[in-house]
Image (tube, rainbow, N blue to C red; front, top):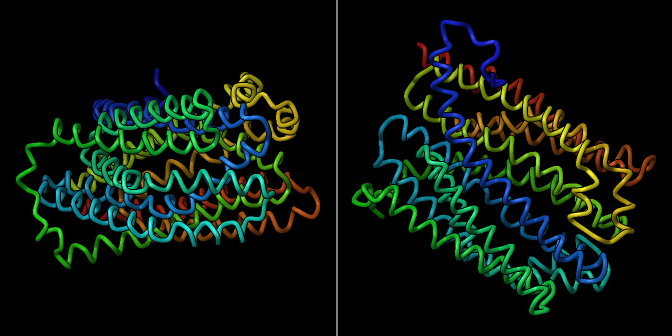
Length: 454
C-alpha cells in the first residue's frame, strides 16, 4: 500500500487512484531529473576537492553563490510560467499558454543581456560584501567570469521547464535536466582534471552543459508541442493587459526568490566569515541536505501542474483530494530520507571530499541531516501548491517571515554557539515558512476551492 492510499474515504478511492496516477506520472520524472542537480553540485565539489586544498572547494562554493544571487532571483521565470500555463491548460486555452511561453522566453533573454552587462560591477560588489582569502577570491572570480556566459541558456531553460510542467509534461524537463547535468559532470571532470584547467574547467563545463540543454529543449518542444506552432504571435505576446497580470505575479515571485536567496546564499556568505574549512563544511552539508529536497520537489512540481490544472478546470473536489495526497507523500519521503541519512551519512561525505580536515569538521553537523527532512517537508510541499494556485502574494509574505526568522536566530545564537547558529537559523526559517503558509492556505488555497464550488 502506498502512503497516499491511507485515510481516503471509500467514496473517493476511485478518484484518488486517478489523481495518484497523475501525481506519480508528473513526480517521478521530476524526481529523476531533480536528483541529478545535487549530483552535479556534489561532482563539482568532489572535483574541486581533488584540486589540492580547501580553497578550491571554497572557491567553487562562492562562485556558485554568485550565480545563486543572479539566478535564484530570476527563478520566477519557471514558477510563474508553470502556474499560469497549468491554469491555461486546465481551461483548454492553448493560445494563451503559447503566449505565456513567448512572454517568458522574451523576458528570459532580456534579463540575460542585463546579467552580461553588469557582470564586472556585480563581481566587485560581491567580494566587498563577502570577504575571503586572496586565493579563494581569485579562483572564485575566475569561475564566475567564465560561467556567466551561460546566462542566456540558463534563463531560457527556466522558462522552458516551467512551461513544459504547466502543460502537464514532466518527461521533457527530465530529459533536459539529465542532458544538462550529465554533460556538466563529464565536461567538468574532463576539463578540470584531465586537461588540468582546474576551477576554470569546472566553469567551462557548466557553460557547455547549459547550451547543450537549450538545444535539447528546442528538439523536445518540436516533438511534443509542434501542433501549437501556428499559435505563436509576437503581437499577441505584447498584449498590455496580459503582460500586466504576468508581471504582477512574477514581481511577487521575484521578491520570494530574493528572500530565498538571502537565506541560502546568506548561509554560505556567513559561513565564509568563519574560514575556508567552515565554508567547505557548509557547502558539503547543504548539498547533502538538498539531495533529499529534490525528492520532495518532485511532488511539489506535480502539485504545481495539478493544482493549476484543477483550478483552471474549476474542479474543487479533485483539487482538495490532490492536496491531501501530496501531503501524504511528503511525510512518507521525510521519514525515508531520515533513515537514509542515518545509515549512509559517512559514505556520502567521503564521496564528496577526501580532505580529512574537512571530513573531521563535518562530524559536528551531521545530526542536522537526521532532523531537517521533518522540519522542511511541509514547507516544500506548500510551495508547489501555492505556485500552482498562483498565490504569489502569500508566497512572498511567507518568505518575508522566513528571512526574519533566519537572521534573527543567527544574530541571537551566534555569540553563544558560533558556527552551529547557522544551522539553527536555517531550521528556524523552515519552521516559520511552514507555519506561515499553513496559515495562508485557508484564504489563498482553500478559499479558491470554495469559490470554485460556488
